Image (tube, rainbow, N blue to C red; front, side):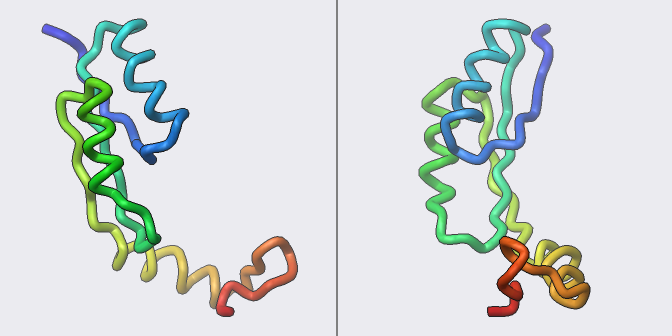
Length: 90
């Protein structure tokens, strides 16, 4: 039985290469998890890319509500700044 690895997958070059690298170096079956945080990214394309590269499974988790409630709002309330200058509320 192969080892199984779940990879947090962005759909970019690094995590795409990581699928094959993990397969080749560990002989593992790779499943990917991509989180929908509400950005303007085509997550379905990322999911299909992971499968095309060799992932045995590629899931997308809708984490928008948790991301806003647990990270974005607390950051805004704490006065978070982007690049040390711009309030994240703009």
